[in-house]
Amino acid sequence: MFGLRGSSRSRVALAGALGVGLVFSLAACGGDKSDDSSGSTDTAAAAIDCSQFSSFGDLKGKTVSLYTSIVTPEDTPHKKSYEAFEKCTGVTVKYEGDKSFETQILVRAKAGTPPDVAYVPQPGLLQQLVATGKAVEAPKEVADNADKFFGKDWKAYGTVDGKFYAAPLGANVKSLVWYSPKDFKDKGYTVPTTLDELKQLSDKIAATGAKPWCAGIGSGDATGWPATDWVEDFVLRTAGAETYDKWVKHEIPFNAPEITAAFDAVGGYLKNDKYVNGGLGDVKSVASTTFQDAGLQILEGNCSLHRQASFYAANFTKGTDISENGDVYAFYLPGKDATTKPVLGGGEFVLAFADRPEVKAFQYYLSTDTWANEKAKVSSGWVSANKGLKIENLKNPIDVLSAKILQDPNAQFRFDGSDMMPAAIGSNAFWKQSTAWITGQDTTTTVNNIEAAWPKK
Image 1 (cartoon, helix red, strand yellow):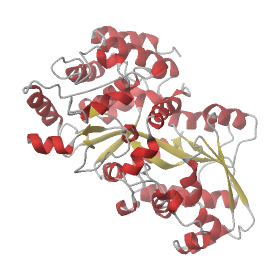
Image 2 (tube, rainbow, N blue to C red; image 1 turned 90 degrees about the vertical axis):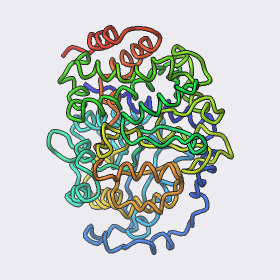
Image 3 (tube, rainbow, N blue to C red; image 1 turned 45 degrees about the vertical axis):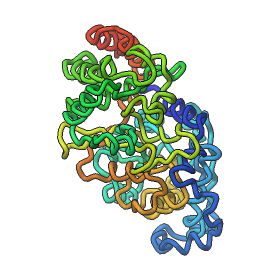
Image 4 (cartoon, rainbow, N blue to C red; image 1 turned 30 degrees about the horizontal axis):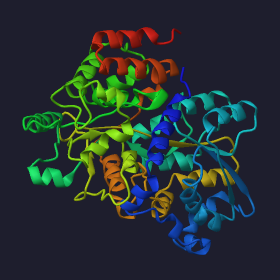
């Protein structure tokens, strides 16, 4: 039932971000120190306990093939993070990055020539790969680490038909609102901790004659996806995680009252002429403005708030201070109350197609707090939901914020809903109808049209 569209949408977002200056923004956030990290595998191995791999036997001279969509230059910190494992065990990790990963991994699995390990960026694709019969269940050591270091929500995404296959790897947070700390301080605004406070803040800003929000859902052929993220975030907040899960699985219809209510709640922001679109135009300009450009209005003083994922940091130009007291920063999009913490986001999962000892050892390493911290030391713009990840090892403030959100014991993490819906919905009807909705179509027509497009079994 699942299409391959989810991760391609993520690539659209990342590609847009990269096109606006990822290197510059990471430098502003503290810089990607991966190139400055020691290249010595002796040094890397000395930093970890090699005895943890002894139960897997003598692995010297073995090779593990790894296949992923992560390509140059983002692959450099990944490769560095394996150095300690390679030195400890004598295993060589053969890394292969491919922009066509999402289609090619299925082709290779069905042909009986899969890699030893793959980084799978969406639960739907994971299910399809398991269905080929070529994937193998995760070893007990990995399952134990999943229980120890990750929440039940995360482990469930790596489980298919009651069997655990894949531990989480990296993660991203979409439930963020970007703002200017300096602007908030100057004007006496405080970061909201509930949805009611968010509405009150928006009203307070609007009362000054300013437009509190700037938004853009333009993304070429993928126009509309930022609006679907808004809706998903509000389904989580207004209807709850259990209803969200039913909605994504189509156990309740797309035009159910709870979903209609979430659209209307989003409309209270994005279709409100008093709230949008700061520095850009009227409500309809939300559809014609690219998601990359919209939040830049914060730095121009034309708006105060922009809801977008953690990766949005890449859109700010060189020299922008992205920090808690800087030019721009972000806060968690609050829930109904200060203790409820629904989190919308994405991530990758480590799926194996072989059960040799060296493959199990590599899976084990990637599921540990050891690897998460090694990766953090050589990366910027990366975070994990691993509870053993030490915040002090993260390199920039947005990574720190994301990790704190993911590690919050009250966090209820849910994967991007449209990424798990059939492609006819997630990358077609949901995007297109949300765009029509922004430009004037009513909510009832919108949700009815999406429901009518849901593929019949």
